Image (cartoon, rainbow, N blue to C red; front, side, top):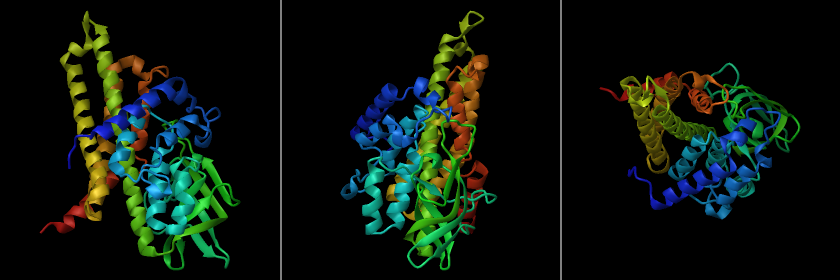
Length: 379
């Protein structure tokens, strides 16, 4: 693959960066989302609708359903800018997760019914795949789906639903008499209780979901299709989160370098000291390696076979979940005492990097997955 972005990609990058700088600055926009009592839901947020009007929310949606018909590499350009801005909007959950799930599992009827609203930001989607006490295991959900003759009802609990607090549409995995199934659930219907869950990163709207006889529209009841879809969706969301983290890490590095040039100690800028230079060099290495791994995984999601796409996603997640939170800690170290204050922005980046390190599986989890993928191939 060519790691140089095209002219079109650069135009998208510049447009999104300028839009976020003007409409979603850290103060007051991002900081307002740290208090859930003052934060607007995405559907009420003009920034979300502005991104939708730019066409970036529907990048993965086909042209015939109001999207751009593009791929993960195109989305990666947007995701990196969202990370740089510590943007609190549910782009990963809706534009990547929900859209991918509907496209892969749903038929023509579901595509026509669900994708247009997702593409224009009129519906915010999320995927509910994990359950309490099961960490990142999703293959045998305790959530059950039963047929009532005129539809399906779901009962169970889901945990760690990324940006679930904003979602109007949930893609829910559930066990059926024939195996794993995927269902579309309207959160405004009865039997759906969405409870926001606090996290170290206050800009994330994660939630837990309790389903008590909630109505579900089947996207697929085919066990094989459901498993393939969930695996692909988790890979895509994990890589999307990694790209977001790369953007946050790159901006944290920029802030640290700027501060090292300005902060004077012993009559010299602290950036002139070799120890600080080493810290900044280590951060740069982490950003560049993380960016290469994550962008390759996006390319593989678009163009490689499923085995290579899964391997690339696992590598990207394993590296970024380990190296980038460490980078955030290093950036705090460069700032010294001021880096620990609420008033300085650097802690927002550190918290974003901490949250992505476990959001779709820890580094250890992905390294174990990678080992299982590689070792059986060895002679």
